[in-house]
Length: 138
Image (cartoon, helix red, strand yellow):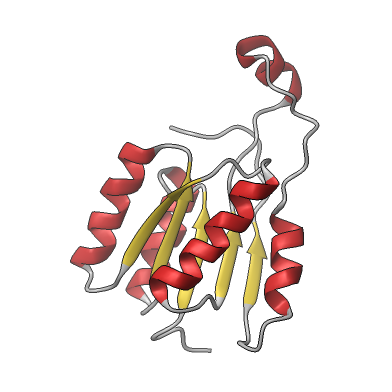
């Protein structure tokens, strides 16, 4: 399967595995929507993708927030002209660590599966990959 001219959305793409996935997809011919919570690092990855000759857009979103997830998908479609590939890579901290350090509710589920289902109903063929990992960052 070729991905020349396709549009990919990658969560957790500002660093680590997500950054690597985004850059690989760009090297293989895709334009990339970078979704993460780290705006500075997203800008760096976008510049790297553009240096490869492909379009890149960034969108700050928390994958546990349904409204932000749907907004990220809409942003990618409007900015890059569609959406063909979705990689749900964003890491979520282990529960006790998140609660202790940040007071977060780690039991919130990612809204990506619902966004993916709604995207599949659109006329364009699309593919999805979900990457499981705990923790995140460098």
